[in-house]
Image (cartoon, rainbow, N blue to C red):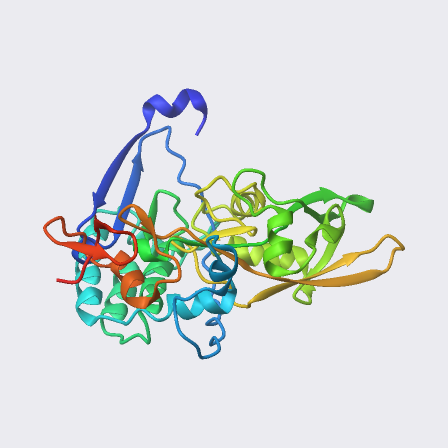
Length: 346
């Protein structure tokens, strides 16, 4: 919306911190009025499931043990995220509340088949009903299924936030941009990571033993063996930032601002685990030929319990971040000599 139209735009905001016994937050913001721009885009197929991580103790992170910093390897992070057990009662509670809340969303019928130019086809009520009849291998798989319902609606005012125990970011030490190349064709160019929220190149190299700086200012021709721009467009279709494909692509390539997911930084609260543990960039080298670099995903653990970061403390403490907060129960934290109020099983 134009800046001078904002005064004509009002929003209905429905926020519930009680979803799934207080563990989740749902925000439905539905614009009404002349100055409201709801954006726009086409729904895409759900990407394939991430690879099964190697067996091992979940929610213990070797990089934390080594550096005492909140970083983790991809396999360790995925193992932890998938260690939280599926709970049918939480599923039923979430589906019931979301179904009730979606009934006030004016696009629920239109989105079943919006037609051009955005061609959205999402039957949110039917998909929530299907989730309510499904048994999932883990809590994460259920959370992703719920999130995908709202992502496929392509409305930045209506999205689903996973519980606090998924406050984890998957990060690349590379930010991709577009420029016009020879003949006016778009080229994908690698740049240093976002200065405020990205992972610094020096930190990445020391933790993950890959020097990604060789990519900087190089033209990236392929990502994981496929045309780079095609991969970026497909990723852009997995974020609920606008119904317009060009707006989503711009958002996917923008510097990470601490909230909206980008190709570089993916907050698990509102996006999905990357399909692969690494990204392979094929780029033009100085001699005009091509070279490739395999870059593992870095993982930043930002989960909090009370006033303490949950790091390397195992599934019971980690899963506490997804349980209801209870001020009446206090648990002694071993090793720090103090009591912390935090989410605890009752």
